[in-house]
Image (cartoon, rainbow, N blue to C red; front, side, top):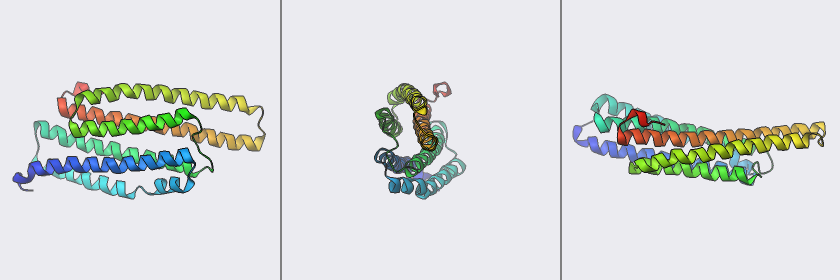
Length: 224
């Protein structure tokens, strides 16, 4: 790798990380649509269509390793490559969680998220991932700190949604026969898993912001 191409390689890595982010956001969009609409077919497509993300992740991970080994970046460049390397892992895990959401949608014939709070959580979570990628692209420390604060609201909504789902199950238990109860428990379990995975996606968005903040300001104490 000629040294004169070094800056081009760094710019290309940033662009490709963002392109992978767009791919992951598209998968997350599809999974949320499948959940809200009760679209089993779309859910199955998301659940089984992770190959493109995995291939891109492995290729970009290899490029980061090559940059470490062949160019031996220092100071700001080192932080950029290291942060990008870690952000790729967060994006790959978000894609895995989107696949989980697709599986939940594929397992039911009806919309899995009738409670508007869960739809709201999905929208807020998607926005947080997008904002974290914008912060990475713009090296925006202020936006990174705002993302950490926004995650607190998502955590609170997730706790409220989980409590509401559990309370509804308890209230309906006495009026439900054994077969219907089994179906209800399956649906409740998927709803709780949906809320849990949305919260985990938001956590990965915070990770992206934290890694970007370290990349920009170089203080390890700034990692959330």
